[in-house]
Length: 136
Image 1 (cartoon, one colour):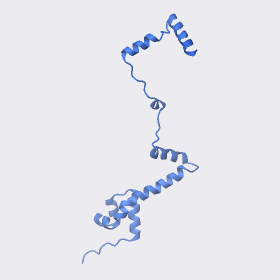
Image 2: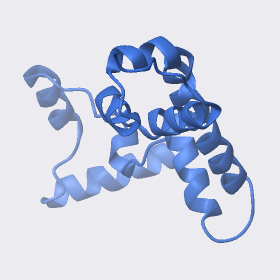
Image 3: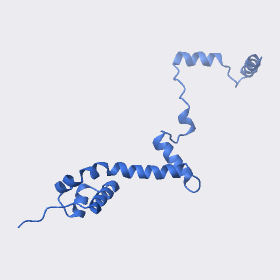
Image 4: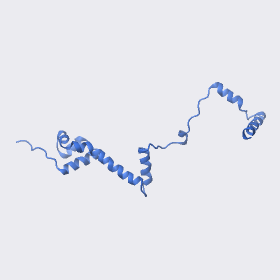
């Protein structure tokens, strides 16, 4: 006489859902229940397919409550939520400022010619005059 056929229980269903939701592999879950992975798929396909969604929903619900609440950890939870869900990221100030466009040799020479050399007396006078004209 052969081995009796496997009969799943509600306790087994809960265990499979929990283990799958926690991220255990098919091999680990079938070893825990002492059944073949084909038997696991045969009787627990719904639990295997939806466990991660339910687990993620519970964690998201808990995180959301924490992020929208008060007390220790609320700020960290809110920051985490906004980074993951709203696309926020930490940046340096310089990352937000667009880089200056590159200037060609001719344009740079023209800029140099238009701006006075402040290392000379004439350049200082021109710089003062330029400032006066732009203010008025």
